[in-house]
Image (cartoon, rainbow, N blue to C red; front, top):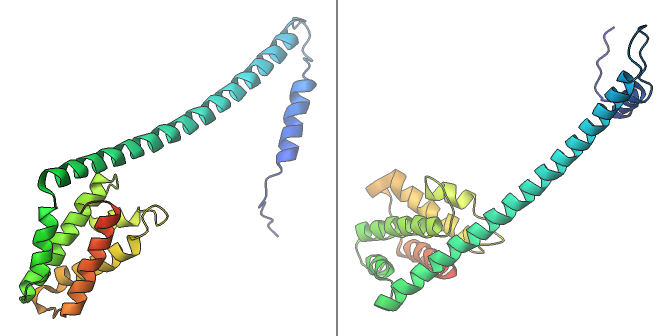
Length: 195
């Protein structure tokens, strides 16, 4: 009968290590009397150095998280400043106005273009906000719903874009579906202050 060990007795290991260190003795004749004391000092200094390194590693990790957090907010602030400058110079977002005009058309191909261009704009907005990814889907996956309350709307609109991208001209769009998708994009852009 074979028995598998499926646990680790940490207490036993620590007790054995303590016994080794605390009761370290040489049984070889002729060993210097100062050698056991030296080994004990080296072990104690080694443990102190290991503890110090652990403390430094924890401190470094905390500082890295703080710096990353501050960098994210600085990037977000720069994106808002850039958007504010763009809106101040034109008074409106011409890119969004073009998308709305396409969505208001009676032509289904314009509706498709409006949704595709809105999705491209969504990718640009997410990139400016610091969400990195090779596609809008990847950017939305890392978007925190606690920070971006309209992330579900962004997913819904992006799914319409995916249907258009995969089906092409064969997909029959309804005017209300297009308006729902455009309104979802609009609410996301408003949250990011992009329009």
